[in-house]
Length: 472
Image 1 (cartoon, rainbow, N blue to C red):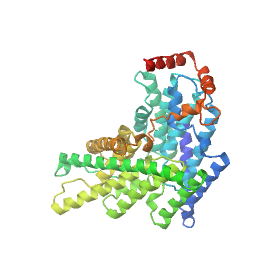
Image 2: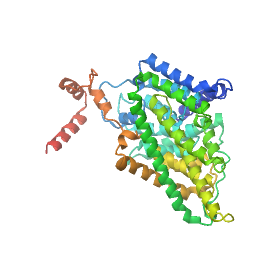
Image 3: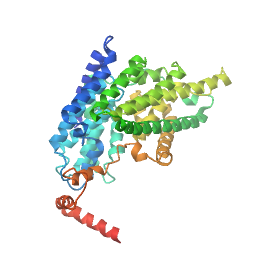
Image 4: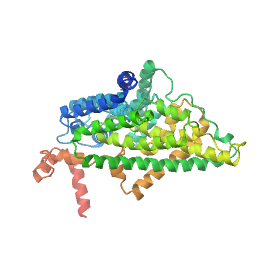
């Protein structure tokens, strides 16, 4: 799994880079690159009969296949799911290779998870090793996508959650898969970390020293608000797409046209996808970019990525989350530096903006994707371990960000499940679709009886016991 995932992700990034060099970096036709990508995705949906014909490859769907004790009646075959995953990977290459405003890490994890599902024959049979296989695949996918071995292992444990009684061999499997994936990627792309040139300053050297930790906690709270705003934009964008008098298959083309308009005609090149270059640029020049520019970039990235991810363009939100956090953190850090200089020009009471920018990048990733531990480790590793003294404020920012985001979505907006499609949440609609064989949107006794008949004895006993408890 590790070797195959590493090779597939290497091919994926090579294809994306080819598109970047020949389209996005073209002086003459760069403005048309996102539109071309959206047009190809739209054409693919028309040829395939709609985006719905590519469903069933998401990580929540695969987790359902692993955790259920019986096979679903009428579920797609392993081969069909493999074909759909391949097509989605190609569409992700098209989306990102033309500069649309999403990220590659989500497709890398989905690709690795579907490779696991294919080799484990998920959906055809249940096996105790399937959870281990899925977690190993996800670990390899994150490792290959970020070139970050430790974060990949933690991601698998944090998201897939193999179980409390997991055998030690399952942990060893993840370690081997992550190692093999990292070796494959580093053989082709080298071991240079994604973020280079970062110079963190030990926050303990500032005059306020540990008194800065609350400032990082407040930064985390702001990140939670940004993540909640992104979730809300994503939810509202989905509602907006449904209200538009356009065919569903046309949405990727419209979204890509908006990307092109803002990036090229609005002179906002930082909003397009170009690997980690733009995130690295914001982090390394956190003290130099203008306050108004940072604010505009942060707001527009939230809006543009939210619209893109709900339009049908294929990509992830890891990279957008890092950019949103980095630009917002630089804005916060510069504001503190201005206040610091106004109080005492000679003595620095707070750390430079790059520290706050890096902490906020990890905090936004943690709250937006629900992976706080992964985000903390990831930021340290992808920056090449620039300075581990940032760990303490980083943890404070990540913790407060995750808490505030969950609080806002649950108790303020009251739409956590609707607004935030957590990678852990599994929709009950998959069970409804499995029983509704004739796809008329209504379940009848005959359909339920046919579905129930296909269950094994343990599943039938479980349903009967639950029914008796309900009656009691």
